[in-house]
Amino acid sequence: MTATYSVPQKRKLVTALPGPKSVELQARREKTVARGAGTLANIYMDHGAGAILVDVDGNQIIDLGCGIGVTTIGHAHPDVAAAASAQAAKLTHTLFTVTPYENYVAVAEKLSQITPGDFEKHSVLVNTGAEAVENAVKIARKFTGRRAIVALDHAFHGRTNLTMAMTYRPWPERAGMGPFPGEIYSVPTSYPFRDGLSGLEAAEKTIDYINTHIGATEVAAFFVEPIQGDGGIVIPAPGYFKRIREFCTENGIVFVADEIQAGIARTGVWYSIEHHDVVPDLVTTAKGIAGGFPLAAVTGRADIMDSVQPGGIGGTFGGNPVSTAAALAVFNLIERDNLLGEAKRVEAALWARIGDWAEKFSIVGEVRGKGAMFGVELVHPGTKKPYPEALTAVIKHATTNGVIALDAGSWDSVLRIMPSVVISDELIDDAATVLEEALAALVAAYPA
Image 1 (cartoon, helix red, strand yellow):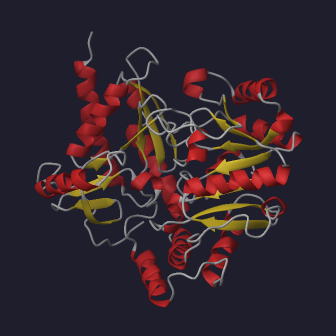
Image 2: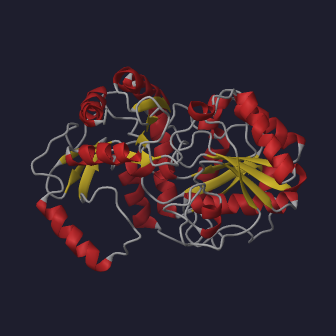
Image 3: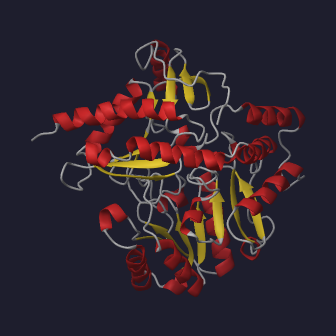
């Protein structure tokens, strides 16, 4: 895809990173911002376009993180900015549950079209991914009359009290934050690199755990991330979700696809569950839906969604007019510019450029991914033992050399690569070269 951007799509460093203005801002931050709002790289951004961020010192940085999957269509897309600006000049808020407006309805109509399944669907719009998950829990409990909620090992569903209970690892999100709500259960998943099981074998292990530890008839909803993001870009083996979907149907369990990170064109389809040829009952959407504006949704079977009484779901800012205007622009861009195809191009470029890293670097256990969503699992050579120190070193090298990549994984040992789907092959190559420098240095320094 050929496009013209307000910022040249190339990496360019004019100061050391972080630069002097970023250092000054960091000093101000430490006096006023809570320590718990930690930061991967203390490099302060001023503007951006496409796959490039420009910091306050004028450095042009390749963004392989997209604010954790938000700016899938690229930074500050002019169509999204124009739609949001025009809406802000007309109407910024009324609250849809008081006096409604068309944008909310239009977004719900589009979600009915793009989410999997040919049945009638309804949606509720909220602000964040965690809020979408919480509402999906409420809806499933109301519909089934049951209380137990199942989530997969290595899952990440949010940072609210309820969604932290559904999130797998204790550090840093959950440490010292309890007590958490009850009737939340984490169950074994399919992790091909680590368990060596087929999809069916892993699914039967999951099902056995539910039957022996919880009881299938007690479960209201089974939440899955079709591709786990924070968990380390874990993609279950083929057939895993098909068997889990059958189990849910057999036992009256609401099957929920949490597509907050992997949905909205990131993996070459609208929703990543499509790769598994499975239709969920409910889908949660957030992050990439509005190009950087806060918006999230729960979409699903009309009978399930409508089991909740009027006033039982919603919120003050959910489906805000400006955010929904931005989302409608995003939907249009994905279709107009064939961004599903662009995600597939990015996938091909990443496989071609980094797909052999497990053979080239002894500390790389596996490279895996779909679309513009890849994980590189780092291990001690000759083993599958997680190597978190290596990840720390790779990210430090990358950020000081103008590449923003993300950490991930239950053991903090997976390099997460989630660029915009409009990133050029040239930027992928440049960023990969920077990352390779770090990997090569670590291999050379590894104790014999």
